[in-house]
Amino acid sequence: MDVASAGAERLLADPTLELTSIIFPTGSLGLFRLSFAGDRGGYADQSGTVLVRWTSKWERLELWLFAFHHDLMMGEIGSMISGGLALIGVGFVLTGALLWWRTRKTFAFRVLPGRWSRLHIMRHHRDLGAVMSPLLLIAMLTGAMLTLRPVADFLLAPLSPPGTIAESLAAPNVKGGPIDRHFDWRTMLQAVRSSYVDAELRTLSVPQREGQLVRVRVRQPDEWLPNGRTVLWFDPANGRLIESRDAHELPLATRAFNLVYPIHASSVGGLAYKAVMTLAGLALTLLGTLAIYGFWSFQARRRAVFGSRHSS
Image (cartoon, rainbow, N blue to C red; front, side, top):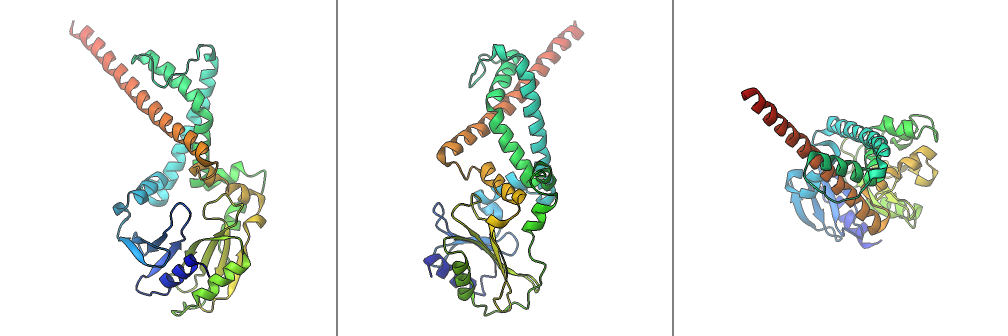
């Protein structure tokens, strides 16, 4: 058994931790990420020694930033709002590209406007937006697909019937037995290893009530998804394997959907893709900031002009 598996076994065997899930170490983060009930969590080294704990995601910058980006700290409703905003962004990108096409002969790429007048800000907005539109479209469309499942179903409908993604990712319709406090985690992890020899252990979810199953996700070498989509479910009463679902055998629409998050999060494509998507994010911030500045400065000047005419 490798070091990470032994560390996980040690963590899972400690009843005082009250674990709900574990994310296994990776090459970029050589620590276990632990989750407890509520927002509580922690990090542990590969030997299974807990190094850091927190009682709220507000104590960890990386956690609340992700939560804010994903669902605006509002749960499912916030996730739907984020998806709606992403769709609005897609509309802005497409309509902006159409408007730019009519004036393409005056195109001039600049990082910043030549002058801080409303006209120059509008030209800068139009031309920078045209350059960045493919990347912005990718970021917003993939974001909408991740937060609004109907969007993913609609776009991937030519590959598989609607509802296929949710159905193929759902847990087996099988109830587990009573949770065994002395569950044999070592044997279960060995069974996972023997089933997918070349795969990397990624996550393990611990049942919180009777009827739930132990779920283990592994990432096979050619999977783009950081945590993989190859899943095994075990009965927490006796360790019996209930179902094993190979990511390579999922329906075509689901396999395509599994590529959406890595593209959105830039977890594929190496440093070059991360760099261009970072530029796209900075460009989006600049476009929005200058648009607000241009609008309000124009309104201020307009009020000043009309105010002086009225007073005269």
